[in-house]
Length: 220
Image (cartoon, rainbow, N blue to C red):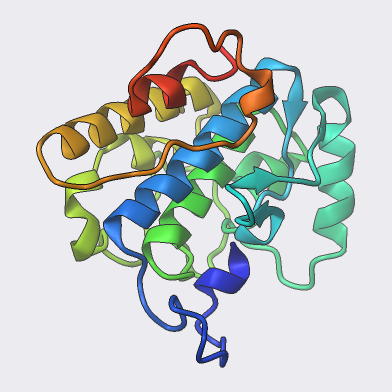
């Protein structure tokens, strides 16, 4: 995923080089990532240090380098120590200042990844921002991408609340975007392929679901 979004890519065969993704591609990528994160959380896993580099887009969006929830704080602390310049784009404030990592921390990082997908790899926060706990909600340093205004929802900004308890869950974040995608697909001519990510973990294949149903119910 990071290579697709990289603005430094020189491969002329890369259709996404130095350009933004199409709306259908953004829907596909965000759907796959939210599906994967929802499933990981459901089965007791967390993904400390989640970035676009930890998402493979070969054969669908696939997440790697996750861990058991009980190991997440220790693994996140290790990763933090090995990053030269750590910002809110890599870890939420509770991890940067208190070495705490929970499901709410995953929500923060997932929102960063979603933002970078829509902004062609540009992160939402400055690389030199001082982390402070006396703020409620942090505003991204760049405006919502005009090309994807139809995907805009305040829930993404809620994911960056300094108060962990006020952030939505991954499941709520996924459900909100599924509803947005459903309306957009219904009201337009977009044809989005059904995601195959984590399909072996689906509870049942006996019923025929709509595209959005399959996204929402996978792994639930």
